[in-house]
Image (cartoon, rainbow, N blue to C red; front, side, top):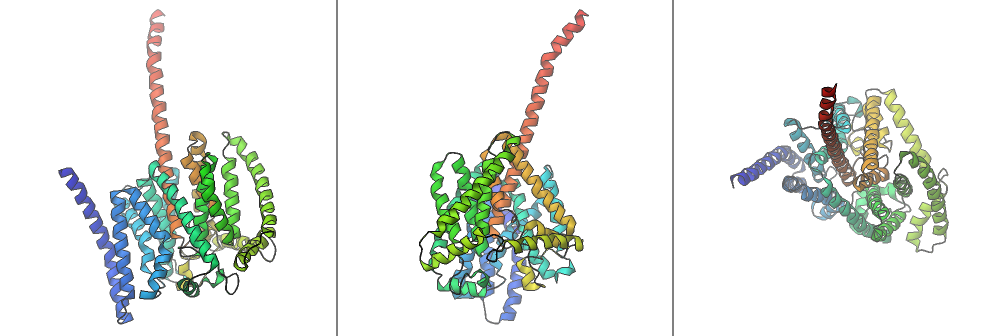
Length: 504
């Protein structure tokens, strides 16, 4: 009984300290904003909502990692809907504190691990991520980005996913990952239906959101906009669809053919999202996951080449069939946008060339400015508080710009080490946990640290941390088994050696 009380007492103490640490800046910010806003109570209300959600998620994580992760992911997926539904009563708040919950949960968990000296350093990935975190913290104060506000904003977008890697390493396990996989597929299907409804037409709040959140860049015509589901942005909506489709594809390869139903729903929603990059990413993921089904490393490359050829043929055939589809005016706008971009990737209707140019310029910027421009460069914070530098639209290129060539190279090494770790574990164990995470990484290519993609980056890095821990446990068990077998052989050989010596 005392043990239980002590455990609950420790939990209450931890939650209380965490809440107090969070509430201090929140209360100070509330009073300062209230003093400037006069009688407006909108911002303090949002602070209180953020504090309440933080306490719920923190307590959930302490009580059950599964419940905490599911609640956190649900909140982040519905974050856009929550903000939009609050507009009629509290108005639109640009720097909304309810978007900071994931940052505070992850940041305080990381801080606790630092104070308790429990930061993992026993895997190659963990040993590389810690220096990157330290470098990012230093770049918060880089004056080239336009001010400390830009750096703090960059920390919110860039450090939060890495914090969730440490939560995954500390609390993740195989059973939790399976629950998360099912939940991601369910979320993807749910978002598909919301997005398909938005292709028919946006409601008044969603139209207002497009207007005030600078979403006009997502307009296909003067009256037709790309859908975004319950999320904050169109781009994150596409990634959530792709993540759900990736897990369905892995399940299909495991002969769980029932998953072809959600895969079809997600695929159709993706096509109507009018994201050419999303469609290409989905095809590349399917190619990669099918190619590494072979048990021998040497067979991966030939299978990859064959799969690419089949994928290109299938995509070309799909484009031709799509041209024959009869659809209403609004649906035809989405389909035509897809067809024009995919059928002529280097033409005037495609943005592929500009994306390549942005990535190249971002990498060159890292070498031209070795100290980096600052952590907030390429994020929303840069456009709000700084000079408005354009993102390179790929994580590694953004890292070159923000952290200099040292940070860029370090980030590439981390991504390479993660891929090698996942690939080796999958090859050795044929564990579909690894294959599922490989599929998620492949479909999120170049956007593992995408700014303002709260749900996508949080769950991806949480699963990477979980997989790193599972791989470590596997390697340790193999090492113990090897040592045990060695000792057993030595014990069997010892009497023979003694007998031979006696005969001599």
